[in-house]
Length: 388
Image 1 (tube, rainbow, N blue to C red):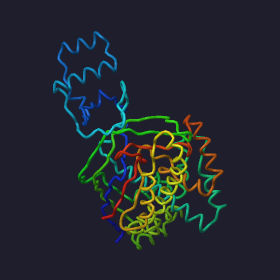
Image 2 (cartoon, one colour; image 1 turned 180 degrees about the vertical axis):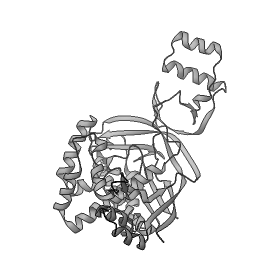
Image 3 (cartoon, rainbow, N blue to C red; image 1 turned 135 degrees about the vertical axis):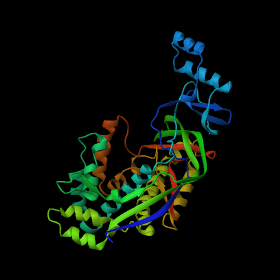
Image 4 (tube, rainbow, N blue to C red; image 1 turned 45 degrees about the vertical axis):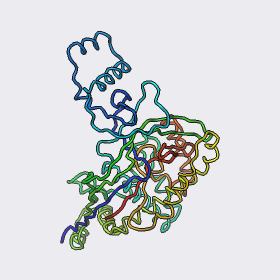
C-alpha cells in the first residue's frame, strides 16, 4: 500500500468558559441585546426599517448610541430576529455602550484545535533535541530560527520550518509540511451546547484591574471532530529515498509522522500531555503568585487553584487530556515560549522585551486573566480533549 490512512474521532468539552472570537467588533445593544437573564444575538441583516424610520435616522445623523436605542425599541416590538438566545452571567451591569466579543460561529474551529496540536508537537521535538543533542545545539537552533527584527507573527515560522517543513522538488515548488498529513474536520456533531455572556478581567501584580471585557463563551457541551492522519507505506518510503534531487529534509518530514506515531491514539495523547502538563504547572505558579495580592481586592482564585491541581493529577490518565485554547489564554498556550522560558531564560526575556515594545503592552507573566464562572474566578480556555 502506497499511503496508509488512520482515522479516529476526538471530542472537545469545555472545563472553564472558552472564547474563540469571531473577528468582528460587536456592540452591546446593537449586535447583542440583554433581556433580563437572557441575551439575544441580533440578526442585523433581518432588520427592516420603514421609510419614515430611515428618513428619521438620516435626518438626525444617528450615532452608535442612537442606533442601540432604535434596535432596543424594535426588539421590544418583536421586530428583531435572534440568531441565538442563551443566559447572561454578568457579575456587574454594563454601563453605557460597551463592546462585546461574540464567539465564532463554529464555536471552536478545527484550525484552533490543530494550532494547539502543532504547538504541542513543536514543544515535543524541541524537548527531544534538548535531551539527545544538548543545550548548546537547541540554543543555536533558537538563535538561528527566531527572528525578532520582523513583525511578531513572522518571528517563528523559521523555527516551525526547521522541524516541520521542507521544500518540495524545484519543479513542484512550495513546501511539504508535517501538518498537511493531519486533517481535522470542523465540528461534525455538537451536543448539549450552552453559551453565556460573561465578564472577564485582566489584573496586574499590584491587584489593579487593567481591563474588563464582556465575552460570549462556550460553557458546556461536546464538540465532535474527525481526525485523519496519512503516512507513506514502507514501499513508497523506500522509493522516495531513491529519488535523485530529493532533499534529505523532505524525507525527514515525510517519515516524521511515522517516528512520532501520531496515528496511535495513545502516542498522540502522550505528546499533548507533555505540553499540557507544562501549561498547567506554569499557570499554577502564576495563580499562586497572584493569590494573596488579589484577595486584597476581593478576588478569590482558590477554586481555580483547586481545579488546576485536579487537572495536573489527571493529565496522564485515561483517553482524555486537558488542553488550553482560545482568547485570553496567554502566549504560553499558543507558542513554545514555555519551553524557552524553562530552559533558556535569557532568550525568553529578550523575546518578552521585544514583544512588549511591538505590542505596546506587557508581554510577560505579570498579568492574570480571569473569567467570572459558577460564582467564582477561573482562567479561560481549559478544555478536555478525548480520543473516542
